[in-house]
Amino acid sequence: MSAIRYLIDENVDDSLRKGMHLHYPDIVVWRIGDPNAPSFGTLDPDILIWCEAHSFSLVTNNRDSMPNHWRDHLVAGRHVPGMFTLNANMSIGDTIKELALIWGASNPDEYADQMNYLPIRQ
Image 1: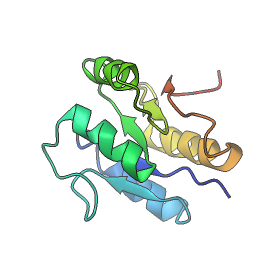
Image 2: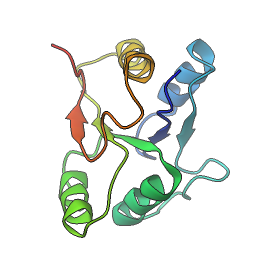
Image 3: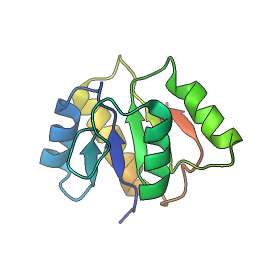
Image 4: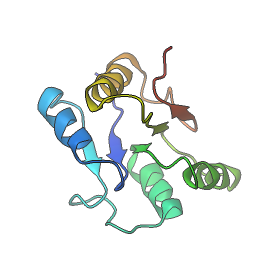
């Protein structure tokens, strides 16, 4: 089993987290605002610091500012277990399957310090 754990950004529809829990209960999926996760309104740089400290890969739909924060985070010598940017053309079901595939077929550090756009395989 993979050790990849996902933190879903607050602007991502909560149906993604709910669907992941329903179809893949063994995968750890938290969302901003969940207990023990960053609270709603947490700034993007602080979310990346939290992900690093707690070994969660970020799932986001933020294509505007998050890539810049990710770059700045790495330039500062920090690390991110992984970042997955959602594809607006993928259904929730396809996104859930893609994240489950990544979780099941990957080594825990395979996506470290990488920003990936879904789908990974094309």
